[in-house]
Image 1 (cartoon, helix red, strand yellow):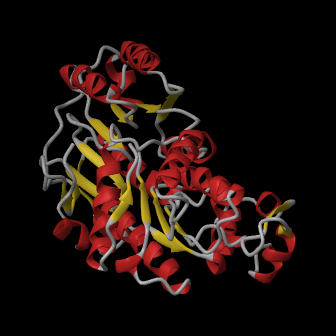
Image 2 (tube, rainbow, N blue to C red; image 1 turned 135 degrees about the vertical axis):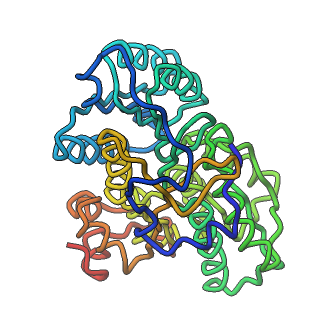
Length: 369
């Protein structure tokens, strides 16, 4: 899947990107003719990718999608492929046999493309949720190029705080899995900002969405750089946490580190000073937009979007937010993190890793409650 153009991404003005209407600015899905008959017209079939790449899928997306679809009067069949492409295909077959009025798919290693082909052969519209893939009728996600831009700015902010000139900085790029269509968008947005400021990647291991692999990859990159690093573009908080474990082990402080997702470890690392910031993508906003698109389709309407991917797929983009230490409280207040978990225990000090800082004290300092 190609990325959306930068000009198009910059045009996003906010959540109002979606206008549900009876006429379309994009492709028109065919009328539903699945084997379930009339009953299938009231079913939304959803497949989530796994529970390992991010805790969001089971903790938040499942809940918000189910609540939204059921509140609109439709049945929600939500399954999780658990990081297995074969299971992904099997779940889809089971759902299609029962009948679906619409399919909402989060891609996992290309598995969604085959499912989309089968669904559309039965006249079932397909929504690509969060991750783009070929064959979808609509793409609902955050503005992924803007996510990357915010990450790039995070690295620049961290370098500035440390008094390091970007043109002289040793920066490692720790991207996401290239099989995820969003990973290139994150990369392109980050590169646009960082390299405009004079940054050139000192090392760039193959991208992954895996904290343990990210830790190993970063440690190897750091060794190749003789232990010198000023900044790390980490494509999400899970990858960032793997990087930070190495920094803590090596007692390397003052390193600019980006992230994404505002997950538990990311928020804790930000408060403790190990991570500069994260890009917060309130899952409920994305899920609500996906529900709006699905409900419009189930009601026989055709959604419209003000963006398109380069292949022409209508793109409903939601605006992300940057979260530093003073904004952690906003994530907690929104219900996307627990103060009890964020503020529990201790972490190594980002000033002296041989000592510990008490998270409760840091939470109090930044108004997290």
